[in-house]
Length: 343
Image 1 (cartoon, rainbow, N blue to C red):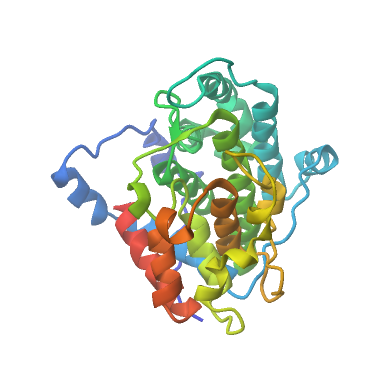
Image 2 (image 1 turned 45 degrees about the horizontal axis):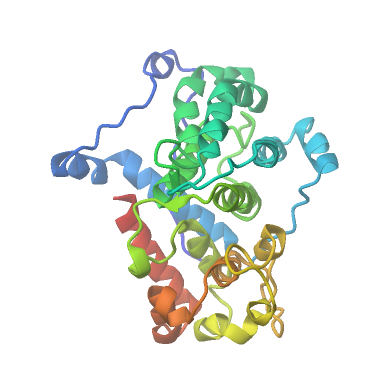
């Protein structure tokens, strides 16, 4: 087990802290700004937070989290902060069902996504007010921007790893505000980090996968075929962490097309072959060790969406599977890429 630095708390009741609260704005515009960012304590804290989530996910399966209305009602009145956060994500996800895509030819994504974005903007303050204890309400000014940027660009109608990173930054901010420990004296709890990594992050994936499919979102800032994934990166980190000590399933085993028999079944010529729920909790036909997990779920998502040989549409994942012998090394490599992406 890797020993990681603790993240320091933010004292939400400190008057000096409250006086510094302001709406975030984009300030990284050139190389000099970037150098300031990568040497900042905020940069380091974000990386440590991701690593702590990864460490908490080691040897853990992705638990099945119910997504029906009864579960949402129960969570919304729960005193548990993770449950309330899941209820909030369910509420956000429901908008995707009610806001219909526009009909007719549209070149890049569906413009109804802008309506979805306007709905989010109108509800951001209320969502946070319902989620947070009153002592944290002053921080909504800062938190709302990170959450708003977590679901894609409503101008470009796209979504990418930068939006995903905004969600992780939002979670990190909540974590340091002690939202997940509800102002108790308990220090960083592995069980809390497990729930964030294994319940909250998959729930977020459910929401953004739904958006990508419903509104045909373009990949944002994609490296094209040489990117790891068109849209996501964090599930590969946490999924590799889940499998870090696994010896019965090798990295090269998980890209075998035979592990995803739905590819050969008759299905739509475009769009997902299997549902988001089946993708998120996908189990390999002949393997029961540490599945479902987010790495295999992410591969199932690729096989569900993409057509053609795996080595052609996902060469980097193909190289990782064939060239990296163990999950421990896959996880280490993912963390190195994380450091680059956060920059």
